[in-house]
Length: 54
Image (cartoon, rainbow, N blue to C red; front, side, top):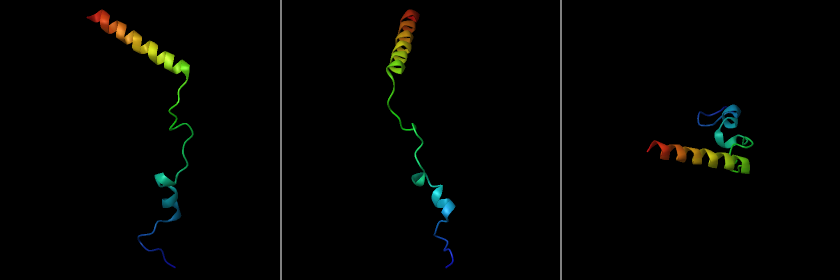
């Protein structure tokens, strides 16, 4: 049976985004307490420097 033009071959099917395995950690929304503290400190430091410039 010949391939018709509207059918995908095996390589095309395997390369579609919906058919790929997820990358571990790519959609990871969790963060550690250390990361939260660091972000808080950076934000606080930015706020202090903005107040000093006024």
